[in-house]
Length: 360
Image (tube, rainbow, N blue to C red; front, side):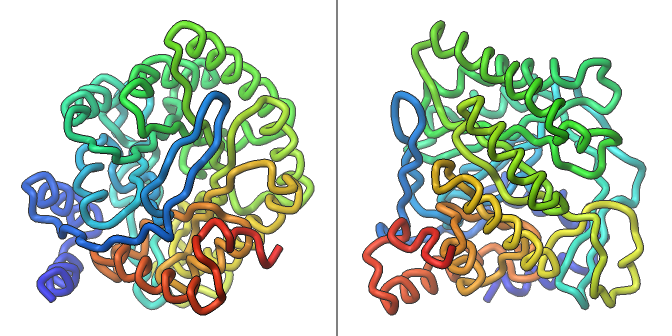
C-alpha cells in the first residue's frame, strides 16, 4: 500500500524530477524487497562457451537506471535482471528540458532524453562498487554513441572494450542500442550496409576480448518497432551472420496512432501501453525470420501478466518493462510473476521456456 501511495505522490512532480527522486530513494535503500520464489520462470540464455541463467524472465528495460546507480535495488524488487544505460563513452547532458512527458490517459510516456548520462567512467565505477554484492544478479550493459561523435561505430567498440571486464564477475550481457529516435541519425545504423559494418566491428572486437580474457557473455541488438518486415528480416540475418546472441524487440516508436492525451504531439519516442501491439508484431516477425535461432527479449507496452505471456508465446524468452512502473508502481514485477506462474500452470507448462513461441 505504501508504494502505491508513493507512486501517486510522485505524479505531483514533473516527470524527470520524479524519476530523479525515485533513484535517490532506491539508493537510500527504500525500495521494496521481493520474497517471491518462481523457479518456473528461470531462463538459460546460450552463448558461445556457456549459458547465462536469468533467475526469472521479467526484466527492467534500459533508460530507468542510466548510470548503473540501482541495479541491485531493482533485482531485490523482483526483477530477474536489470539493464543499465544507455551509456556513452563521454558524459552528455542530453536534449533540452522538458524532455519527458506522462500521457496518463494513454498509460504512456514520451521521452526525448537524448542519451543523457554521466559517461563510461562513472558507469564503470558504480558497477565496480557493487560487484562483490551481486549474488547472481544479472545486469545488462546497454551501450550507445555520443551525439557529437565523429565515428559512432568507434563509440560502440569503446563501450564494449571498457566494460568487458565486468563479464568476469558473471551475470552480465551487452545490448547495442542503435534504435533510439532521440539521437539524430542514430537509427540510420539499422540500415543493412551500416548494420553489417557495425556488427562486423563488434564481432571482431568481441573475438579479441574473448581470446584475451577467456570470458564471454551474450550480446543483444536493440531494434526499433517501426522497421518493416523486410528490414526486420535483414536485421535478423545480420545478427546471425555476425554471431550475436539475440535481439531486443523493441525500442520506443515514433508512431502516435490512437493517442488521446494533450501531450501526444510532443517529439520523441513513445513507450507504454500504445506500443504493445506494434512491438509484439515486430517480435513475431523476428521470431519467424530467425526460426528460433536467436534469443528474443520482448519489450514494449507490458503492464500485466497477460501481456508478458503474450510476448512469451509470440517468441520472447525474456521480457522487459519500464514505462508501466510510472503508473503501476515498484511491485509490478512480482505481480506479473505471480500471474505468469498461474497462466503457465493453466496451460500445462512446467516452465516458461516451454511456452516460448507457442503462438508463432
